[in-house]
Image (cartoon, rainbow, N blue to C red):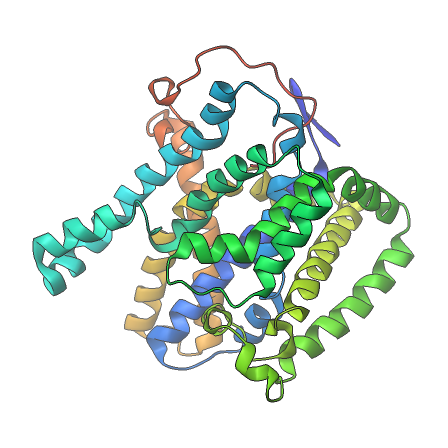
Length: 372
């Protein structure tokens, strides 16, 4: 663990979140570049390799510390777990929409733009669906916290496996992702024990990661045969999947959890190396501790970099353009955050102001920092 003033953060959790947020930015950046260019680059296989575990691990990590606060009074719980994310969703929805509105107006008129904005309150907009979905997970988990966890996990696993495609993103993503979030909450003690066990046994951890990488790679890059290929959801292709076995129901569930365990293993291993390689690991840990900053703000520097690189022709290789776009998407929000901290202006972009709280009572710091 690493001390941060009045509270303590679990070092490997921040490292895991840092890895996850880079993979999320990478997916949007690479697929966006390839879509605009009409061709794939050398980074697409990396996106495809991460597709089975990219979001499962993010949701699993997001549920890890919920047990510390789930029994809070409803007002405080709602303030920290619903209003908190609602504030950032509405704020950054409006910011994103201001940039996209001219194109929507040109295509659908002012009425169409207003309708699109209002629709975003029930159908999450752009890259913000993760922020929208987290409060739903927090509320549902609170409501079922007294139900046997194995029944909930079984039901959630069934939802992930069934072909549920309603067209409403909240419903579809809830069914696909809740099992990982609830597992993070319900199995947190076991996950922390596994992480501690792995960080003390680097040779075993490396052996596990080698075997996992080979299996995950085979599942991703080996096309599923008929009739199993027909069971692969379209969303898998949209997020970088290649139609491999890793996207077939049931296998996708196992691949998601195996990949999440692999990220935990990598993070625990890196955390154990931190005393000897602090300068190399510190940026990744910082990104994890501030992952919401990157997640909220990466869309604009990503879009600017993609447009400039594709329009100017300074770089012609699609893979290299994708890599530079990823770097812009990750570093852009960091620069913005540092400018805000330095100038004191714009704090509301990443810190909820006092008026946006419904519970004004002071909060005792938890022993462990939340992985939100």
